[in-house]
Image 1 (cartoon, one colour):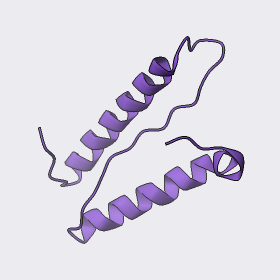
Image 2 (cartoon, helix red, strand yellow; image 1 turned 90 degrees about the horizontal axis):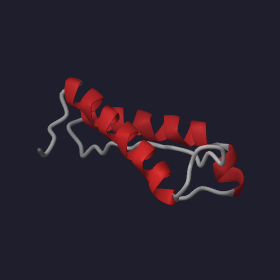
Image 3 (cartoon, one colour; image 1 turned 180 degrees about the vertical axis):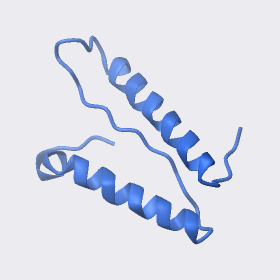
Length: 75
């Protein structure tokens, strides 16, 4: 997803709130999802793919954290 305006300004709070909901769902046996967030860095990113690759790596790290907390994942 792409954030802009006030959502972009509140991105860290949004990420925190979403992760809290995910962890709550995990405790309740509900559906969980992992996510990663990366921002465009004009000094180093040459394309959208660079940003996506970082976000994907962070999503994978979060997936492993959730798995360590008992989440069932697809391999």
